[in-house]
Amino acid sequence: PVPDARALKEASMMLYAPSNESVREYLEHTRGLKPAVVGKYGVGVMELNFPGPGGWQPEKCMTFPWIMREMDWHAICSNLPAKSAPPAPPPAPPPVLGPLPSAWRSKASRRSASV
Image 1 (tube, rainbow, N blue to C red):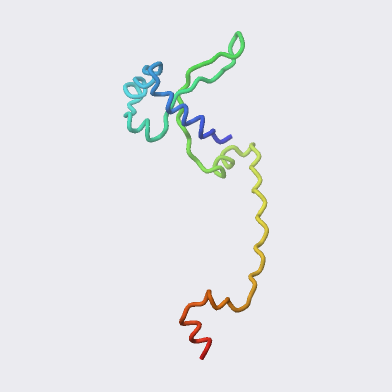
Image 2: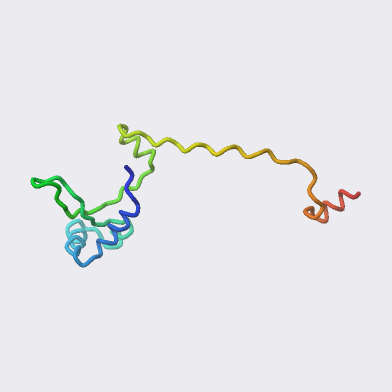
């Protein structure tokens, strides 16, 4: 599924927590990512659970948001069902034709109508 925007925002904010200083150092010194690039693209960190010998284990993970359109996502992951389009809104009623009330007409159109 398409990543949750709120979770990605929280992950990018968590990157700047004091407990994640080692992650920031890794991104900058090992991966060569400048802080401006990390901030611009929303790189973050979050704790996710993975199966382990004693059950699910929490692991600290870096997040690199992947920005794409939903139609591209479904083209790549063709085994996922595409979301159905929402129903089209009902058509607008036809306009009521007739003369405009004189208060709505401009002075020029009132003059030409009286001639």
